[in-house]
Image 1 (tube, rainbow, N blue to C red):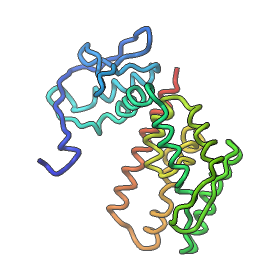
Image 2 (cartoon, rainbow, N blue to C red):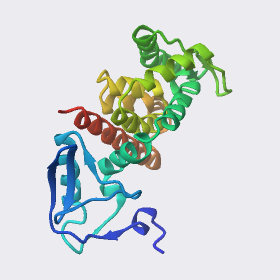
Image 3 (cartoon, rainbow, N blue to C red):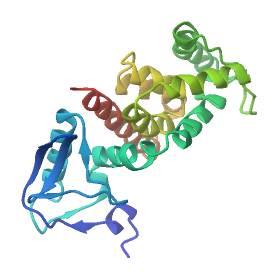
Length: 246
């Protein structure tokens, strides 16, 4: 074994061309004329032509050419589409429950006591999004100092679940990537509504880490982790845009 999880999952490319086929119920991605099948056996067929084109493009790029090596990391949109088709479409309840759980411990609700610079930045950058949640959805989340868990009201959590229930399968799939990366359902919802870009949402979610590096010096490992986080959120943002295109 290589010791690198990404390379341990490497596979050999077996196709020459990835294309899109228009079907009565959507747009299917084909590899050398054969429909791509997801791990559960479902055809990779979506309702958005723009999304199908992007899916085919990432399959065309994966591995470079026939015989090349690729990993699942080369197919981020396919991974999100697979979640939408095989996990969310059959039963949305589990995904809604998981995402709603993030509201119970939302990053924006946990504030520091020191240093003063970070205290002020959290107030300036995080309060507006809790205010937005309250105005947009009528949901008020409680804020605390420190890391000890606090219980949000059942009323607030119930309202969060109602918001998530109203979202499309595609939006839930994208949030399934963005929300864990950001640690915040609030920022995820703002991203889904186009109120925040992936870059802005990531900057807001990584305020603590960025401020610590500013105060104590650059941390290469931390910087790499934040970069990977932003790529995940960008993938979710791209999927949101494409899945909503007719």
